[in-house]
Image (spheres, rainbow, N blue to C red):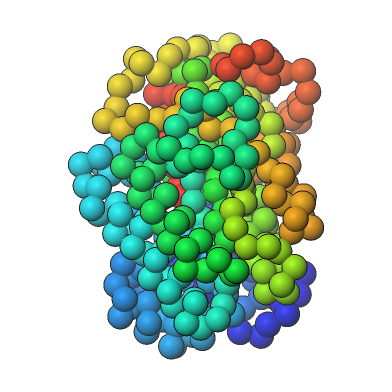
Length: 323
C-alpha cells in the first residue's frame, strides 16, 4: 500500500482503540499520519480545528473522536452532541475549505433495531437514544457539507487491544466466575478494530485517488450473532467450556438508554469502491485474540454454528459502542 499524496493523514481521537490500530496500519504502510488526541485537537472548538489544519495541512482526515458513553448521553445530550454532532460539522467545514476528504466513523445506533434483514447503507435512520441522535447529527453534517468527499463509515460492536471491550471483559470474567449470564436477544456483528482500521486505510487511499464514491459505508464484520453467541465463541476459542455461558434476556438489565435489538448491517456499498467487505467475525476473532494477548486455543468455525441459525438469538457485560 502506497500513499498517492505526501501530506499526512490527520487522525482525530488518537487515544482510542480504533485510532491506535489505524495509526499502526498507516505506519506499516508508510503513510504519514498526525495522531491528534483531545489535548492536541478539540473537535468541538472551531479555533482548535483551524489551528490543527493550519499546522499540519493534511491530505485527508479520519475522525475517530467520539463520546461513546451511551447511558451518560441520556443525562448529558448536549455534551454528546458537542462531540458527536458539532465536532464532525466543524471538521467537515474545515475539510471543505481545504478541499480534502473526510472519513467519519459512525455507528449502528442510528437505527432503531426493529428490522430482521441487514440494514442497507441507504436504510431509513431512527435512533432510539441520545447517543444515536448525536451520531446521526454528525453523519448528516458530513454528508451535507461534503457531498462529493465525505465518507461515513458505520461500525458496530467494536473490540480491540487498546481499550475496554466486550472481549476483554469476557476473558477477565471467565477467570473469575464459574458461569456468565449473557443476553441472547440482541443481534449484531462483532468487529475487530484491526479489521476496521484496514478498511479505513483502504477507503482513504481510494478517496484520495478519486476511485471511491462518497457517502455511507458499513464497516462491520460479516456474519451475525448475539452477545450470548459471541461470548460462547470467545470461550471456545480460548479453550474454556462454552456451556459455562448461559442465555438470558435484555430486560433483566434495564439501563437508561434503550439499545437496538438488531444491529446487523449490509455491506454492498464496498463494491462501488472496489473493495471487499470485512471478513467473518469468527475468523477475525481468531486473529484478534493473539493480538490482544490471548489464545486462540482452537480455530474458528465459520459454518453451521447455532448462533447463526433461525430467528434472532446483549449482555450484562456488553460494552458501549466505540464510535
